[in-house]
View 1 (tube, helix red, strand yellow):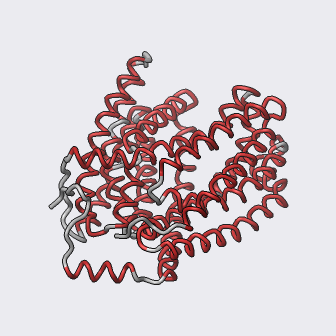
View 2 (cartoon, one colour):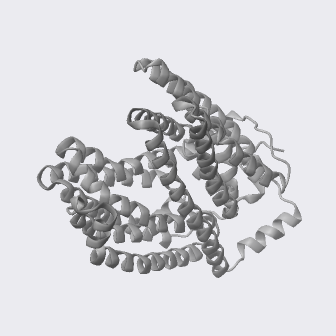
View 3 (cartoon, one colour):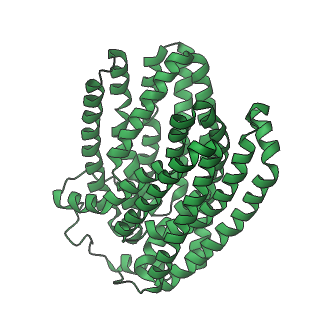
Length: 444
């Protein structure tokens, strides 16, 4: 049976009940061992993805030329925004709920796949209508139409990968991510070798989504039959009501971490933004570490919200300690070696980035610590509160940038990042501690 009843739970056999009892009683140490193994897979995958992305981006820039490369990046970025709309936060929702009820994984996958395909169709139509309304040239419109078909493969792949992540089989999700980048690199190389031009390159990148999707479906079939997509409007409505906060939090996150670049360009020009971004790219790379830890722990933490508040408290304190211990040496290394690192990577003309990097090193440490709060809050059920508080910290970040950038340029943007992260810690840490002090309303 692939459709969930109103209670969102399915009858369990005796064997399934015994399996769940063993899982619920698993020691926290085993949870952390699993999380460490999964984090290693994710780190290796992200490292490979970053390397391949850099190589592919460099090859495309050199082969397509400035104008075509600019068009290519615009089309891919434009399509990616509609991919966020098509996801609607359902990926994180699926991970959270399947982690709490693994027996219902097939039923959830059946419904969420159908829902995401429906959202992908709506996003695709909206994407084309907006492109027409903004009077895109016929060539650009064709490119958008081709690239947008990736919304549909992404809908299926995203749902299946989320279930593997919920089951803490993150080696499969990590391999899928790496294979996606590898397939893109190979298809792009083939397109460039044949000389098919910009349209052919976009077609190649779109077709590159098929082999990784085939990998995911093959891995699922090795464990059992793949459930067919099924539509239940009542389930869809419940899912969207539960996932919209994740979607909005994703948008808020993009604004929170990217608005400073736009504001710097508007207020102080592209040169100031270039100085800032040279340092910020290093912060981006290093923050992969806490992000991976949270991704690896998310399914287990989601279960603990319902199972044991005492275990959840211990998990939070353990992750907080690990992130703090990791953040201190990273911050000190960037403070001490900012000058040689910037000069080695970028050259003497980026000397002002040294001060920016040292300021961002402080923000980086605070982000490491605050990530433990994110882990607990995002995996719980009180997302409305998280959404309101996140809107507040994001608004403060924008206001600080408005005040500091005109006077202090890129250094002002870095100080705004520090101040807004301090504010986030001051707001979210008491929220988490109050939540952890309460016993769960129900356990299942």
